[in-house]
Image (tube, rainbow, N blue to C red; front, side, top):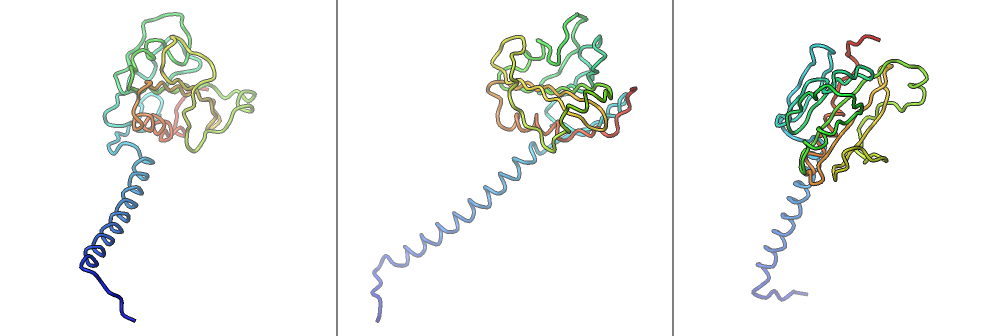
Length: 199
């Protein structure tokens, strides 16, 4: 039995072939996007804090501020401040908190701010604290921080290397997905095992 092939048969084969090639290319691009999404920004800069030995990296477009923006607060000790803007040391005051009002305001609508505090080796506190996660998740805190803004604010406490840590993250309400991802990766890439701190 012979099939009758009309004049449009070959163009249809060509279109079908192009469609299949397009689907294959889309699948490869999607896989590439997923890979890029896991890695974050392409250009990262490594750093080592000379005082504490804290090691990590941040996107090249981000800025490190003074290790401690609130010098009067020594316990817990602030050992990292990085942001999409230049964090500045706060004037001496009696305010105490993981996220200072000025830091929250400076984030703006599309920026991010990440900080890290370290406490001592209190056995009771460590016993009731979760181990550092392999990958951080930035969930909004269950309580309101001041000032009241539309920023997404996260406080995460964890233990690592026999010490108690608290990370604070502020994200602008319109922060792009890449900025949110990079804020998480800054925490994921911190190396806390080489800290030089007095007990």
